[in-house]
Image (cartoon, rainbow over the protein chains, first blue to last red):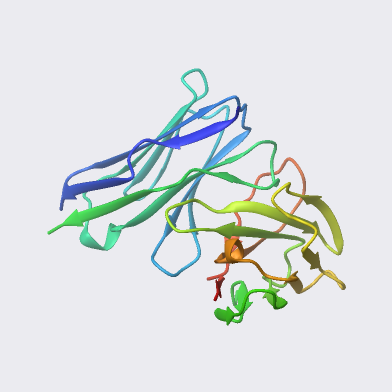
Length: 112
Length: 116
C-alpha cells in the first residue's frame, strides 16, 4: 500500500542548531514534493517545492533534498529560532497540480 | 492577495444535523481543493475543482458529503446527517491550476467542526 512517513512525531532542538526532518514514502513515484508549515489552529503554509529531477532546493535558512532512489526527502532549518517552532508537513504531488498526499507531520520545538 | 477565506471558523452542531461550509479562494485561482484534518494527522484529500467542474472525489467522501463550485469562484461543502466521526478541521486550498505545472497550494485557516 502507499505510505508516507515522517519519522518523528516530535523533535526538540536547541536554538541556533540545525533541525533536520525526514519524509519517507513507499509505492509512490511523485513528480513533486512540497513542505508546509502549520501552526496550531491555522492552515498549512507553503515553504518549498522540489521536483523529481532536482536534488536540492534552498530558500534563506531552509533547504530541501529529494532522493527518488531512497524515496526520501530531508528538510533542514539552519540557525533555528524559537519562532520556527511549528508542525512541518511533507506532501507529495503525484503528477503536478493534483491533490496532495500529506504525511502526519513533525512537531518541531526550538528551545531558547 | 487577500488569501483563502473560510467561513465559519468554528461550527458546533448536534449529531444528525446538516452543516454547510464556504470557501472563497484567491480570486485568480482556477483550482480549489477540500481536505479534512483530524488531530495528529496530516490533511486528507476530499475533493477538488477546476473552475466549476468537480474533477475528483476521494473514497473518504461518503454520499452524505457534497461539494459545489457553481460559478467557478467560491465553493461550498455540505455534510448531511452529521456523525461523530465527522468532527475534524475542514481545510480549503486553491492554486492557479494548469496540469503538470506544479504550483503550491494556498490554504485557508479551516472550519473546525465539532459534533455533539
